[in-house]
Amino acid sequence: MTRRPDTRFVAGWIARLAAAGLAGVAWAAAGGMSARAQILGSQTPGTPGALDGELRIRPASPPLPRAEPALRPPDAESAGPPASRRSGIRRTPNTALRRETGSGQNRPGGFAGASPAGASGIVRPPAPGNAPGDLTGTRFETIRPDIAPPPARPSATTLVAPGLPPAAPPPLRRPRPEDDPYAPLGIRAGSLILRPAIEIDGGYDTNAQRTSRNRRGSAFWRTEGELNATSDWSRHQFDLGLRGAYTAFTGVSNANRPEGEARLGLRLDASRDQTIETTLTARIDTERPGSANLPGGVSERVPYYNLGASLGGTQRFGRTSLALRTTAERALYEDARAGGVTISQEARNVTTYGARARLGHEITPGLAPFAEAGIDTRRHDLRLDQSGYERDSRGLTLRAGSSFELERSLTGEASLGYTFRAYEDARLRALRAPVLDAALTWSISPLTTLNLRAQSEIAETTIAGSSGALTYRGTATLTHAFLRNFTATATLGIARADYDRVNREETTLTAGLRLEYRFSRLLAARASYAFERYSVNTPGENYQAHTMLLGLRLTP
Image (cartoon, rainbow, N blue to C red):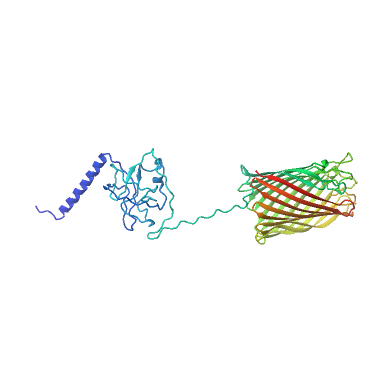
């Protein structure tokens, strides 16, 4: 019988396939477990890697590879805990074929981050037993849940193209220094950041009562507490400021005085172009015995209180803005004592209601001129004062100015205007005068800052025949940081009051220097000196005073 030439060839292949099939069935029947794995192929371009799930036969004695660092961190499948892996076997990289470090061919059919040393960097020799293997030298071993895998060591995460040298790791960057490493961090309470502080000082005052006669110096103790709170909201803003102090003199008992102030502000962002703002303020202070508005013979300081509230809003139309605000202010004076007799000051209590409108336009991001008009009315608790004058009045104030920010070195607002005030009593002349308001901050250098303040108004008075006093106040504050934790602050101020229809002009000149050394965010030491000189064109009322102070400030 004639046989075709290719019959022997086909029969040979059929025999080989049958033998392979029988070998596979025998291996499974002998208790072999199925495995799913991805094995790295050769690092040499063009060499195919082992297929996923391919069964391999372990060589008799595979060569030991050299340990090389992993190019990338191990996959979660091989580096995580046993419960998180997809299978119950651990894979080790191909050890039969040599790979070049940094060639980048570490994932053609294999798992990421593999290296001849594995995740731990230790090359393990093949373990004896019947564990499955392959001709490429890849080793499989059963994972024991009670034994934790070796810790993975850090490895580079940058892939390199074939044939190129390994990439250098990126340079380490220095962390950005803090703006003020000695500034208090505050205490977080929900969405608010609280910044409390307490200060205890001791010092000496050469003229405790600020009088021209019977000047007496005395040592004193001063205690001050402070609490500031700011909201940490994505929209809107809440601010709270509280400060209270008490000064007790050891040698002049009637010179003790309290002082304090409080401010609460809330801004609501109704929309991108509309905001609503409300503010509440309170203040307590004392008048010196020689004040022109106190009755004669008063020998101790007289407390007074200021309360205020405002409500307003701002609407923006592109670069143009319109702001409206209403205000209410209340001034209260305690009774004075002269020679053991109580003198009522109820006639000085006054309430002021006002409203003002401001129209502004932003020419550039750093320059926004505006025009402002305001009206107000003052109403006293008593219609007539002690001299029989009716001091209720109405006022009108016009201003023009600009807010600016020039290269972030000069910021603030300044305005110049004119004010009018008419009184209910025909015997009191209407007052009119120019007014100036400014608040500027000049950053001379990163270590030096200059603050300028100026304000003017028509103040109330109790002097018979005088409608009021034109007052002007200005201060300059220079702060310089010699070190991050050592600063010096110098202040210079001047105040002037010119009373209408009476020959009385008062000028007060103040100067001071304060040094502050911060030991940490928590504790700081302060030392200060203040000078005050009061002069008036009336004989026998001038005085001057020197005050020295030293203390500690605690900011938890």
